[in-house]
Amino acid sequence: SLMPPRSHVRGCSATAEMRYVASYLLATLGGNSSPSAKDIKKILDSVGIEADDDRLNKVISELNGKNIEDLIAQGIGKLASVPAGGAVVISTALGSAAPAGG
Image (tube, rainbow, N blue to C red):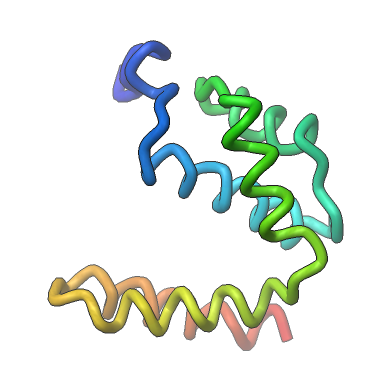
């Protein structure tokens, strides 16, 4: 299996918080304008990730009510400043997906 053991997945790192953010974004893109902790845990559980309640609730409180498109645009801007080829791939992938959604 490519998934690390659950004990390694659950953590207090920025990577764990990004998983919560990504799950929140998936839920909103799926039509849920205000995902709950239960909604996000369901997404994370589907890929074998155990959520830390305190961190998850913090991410939800920071994202709830914000314009998701603006957050994505801000994130792309931050990725563009990272000196790696990954930002180009991400912005290109998002750019090609944007016309389909809008």
